[in-house]
Image: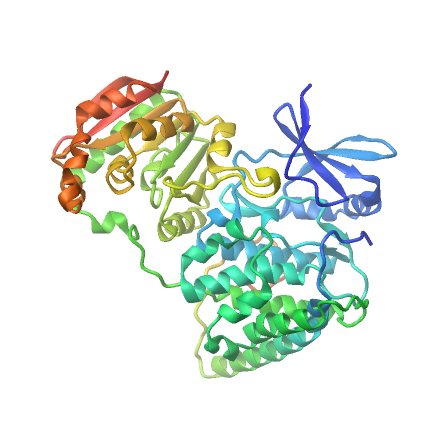
Length: 61
Length: 456
């Protein structure tokens, strides 16, 4: 590994774990909500796709 | 052969950029050889080129101590403080997309500076070829803090307090400090889990562990890091700003005469083809309405406007139509960005970059009266400014009889007589110092004159 020329911040490295956990919960909650909504036929608003993706391996929102 | 090391390229020990004979080259130092070779042989660089995420390069030479690569040239580098909100958002999203792709291929971004990105051919593109490093299993993202300071911070400040905050990096080259960011944000930001963790908690932890230099390298699985990135991506994707600005929806608002508009449009087209121009800068171009008329004729057009909403509308059009020749940027001609950074040589001024770009033409429609009457800039000085933009200039001069001009003059009240100089004759005399008047035509059913000028 190349020594970094700026300090990544020890605190930042620690807090990522928490932030990732929260993000995980949020994502789970959103997926569940989306499934429930689609059962009732409510579709989420389509977000503008900002990049012309030739790659299809991720959801376009 | 003239070569000089680019004065902004000195922080990364992996290598540096230099300009040689008008092409952009990069020296890769020995310390980065392993990464560079792996990035090349694994095909990851090529993958990034194919997706148009990273500016492509060719290897030029290779010795035991250094490898030299040449990158495809970008005609006009633009900086984060020149982007509209949507552009800034997309630059952030691109960074996250790239980091995710890196992880999938066992690499990682070692820095997430907003200056790693510039807008080119209608999209954001990553330009720092040496930002990639090997991914170490379960290591957290080292560039995370920088991502928050450069991207999330200014974006969230903009959401709460307006588009001026998109210019944060002009003042703080390293981004706004986490403590300040956390203190500035309103209480309601604590209700957002993403902001709570990625800004407020981060600020607290950052401060708490300030002097703690212990190694943290095993606490975040790849899957968790991806969740982190997805969470940030989702949040930023859904960010919006709702700020009314002065020149928003200009063409709907003003009392534009349809006939005058068509005449102007034809004249602009004729002028541009007569000078056989290929590149152009449109000053005060708003949402790019007039530049768009030149799409068939021009390869490259910079549309600069002070109104971030107008620039964003232009950008939205570009995305919708998949246009590649227009570059929308936010520029205040009364205060264009200066040379920033150490020795004032790290980020280049707007005027310097325009001069470097050697554009064929400049367009200044419906802008001189604002520069002169609202900006209080004498004709001699605005002429000097425009002479730096390009050798050919098409400028629209609204006479004293024009309704907008009358409005601006009236709003000067007692000071109105100071602007008695504002008339056709003085304009022509002052501009004649820098330009010769090639053609002059009054637009029918309007009080405006179009001047086609050629720099002396």
